[in-house]
Length: 187
Image (cartoon, rainbow, N blue to C red; front, top):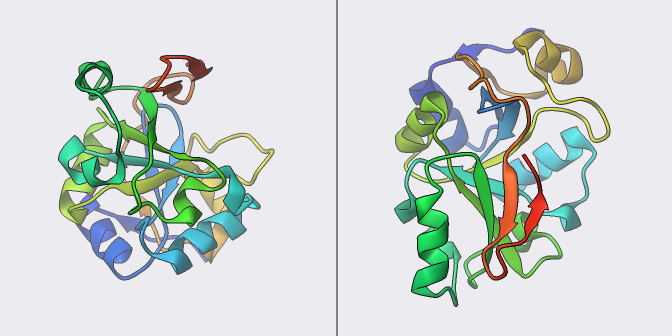
């Protein structure tokens, strides 16, 4: 069964209802859901074959949607992140008590990015919060770059694909540690 094609506002409703969607990002298609909905996150982890201990990246259109998830960050550290956004840098922040273990995994940090992709920004704005952003693929397989790749990998196991083009980047976002500035994954 083919996945329905969704507008960002229709996809936001699917997220509010606890669903899982695929959507275009800067480099590949992502799988997303409400990060505070355990059942939705568990569905993504099961679809990908990914352990909960690995943790997940969250994206938003504005840092105000995510700032309650971080703690113990200096003004200089925060400025470093904010100056790189919106853009292709994911920062690992010390997590606050509000971050569920199913989001942070076994880590003492939470991975956050303020996206510059227009469809992702519209989706997060319509949802009114940050969303999970993990590559749309089963663990160990190549990430989806076309809607057809999503259909092959997941068929009707997701609740829809958000219409839109990829952002033109070749590689997923760089990941950096806010505390040290170290690059964990290069772009």
